[in-house]
Length: 309
Image 1 (cartoon, rainbow, N blue to C red):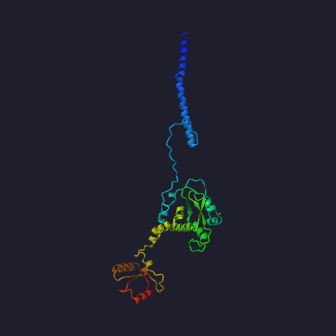
Image 2: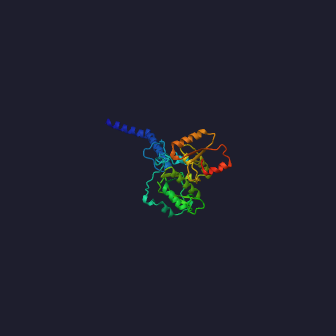
């Protein structure tokens, strides 16, 4: 008898909770589920993927994925001794991750492959957002380029040559597997020049920026004059190179030898080169005083019998 009211009281209490506080808690749970569903829908709309179960409404900061093939800080318009120097090696050259494999036997004969290459329109080439770079074997590509394009065999590529005016180069991002065409006399002549410079710097394989081939002609000429031609035009004459500088290509005498004429007002120079001649008799250097009045016609005529610097 005493247990019945208590049991009934519990039922009344439970019923009271379900009718009073129960409604509030139910509404709270429904509101929470609605918020979670709204967050899931917004995340699915943003990413295209459903949100994970139990995901928090607070999104974690998204960081871009770091690429292992970040491009090195190489200026494509730098001087040749910098561009093809020690910083331009395989460790510092960016290469995109690829699972392609290159068959060495398939690319052994580059010249034959280029002869059978299908000619395509420039508009058919795929255009990308990143600057294009090419992985080039210097010796093979240089030989193939001259064989195809230098029809008059003068080590130049001009409009007078009757070659196909196109060559295929492998991209650096694919490890040389994918190829693109280099077309036109200007770009091919620049390619010939770049391959020659790379060969002079002892490079066997290079990664060449396409921007270096399509550079504005005026900008390219100014850059070459500043970094390449002008340093080669400067001359230094001393004991280290007087044996080469003192020779005259038109010395047709019986005893051709390096010879230097020193003005009367420069005794230090005469003393210096005389000492060089004594210390290096193998040079066979002839150090001669210039006449007091070297503008004499007969004296100038007689200098033809002993040409020198």
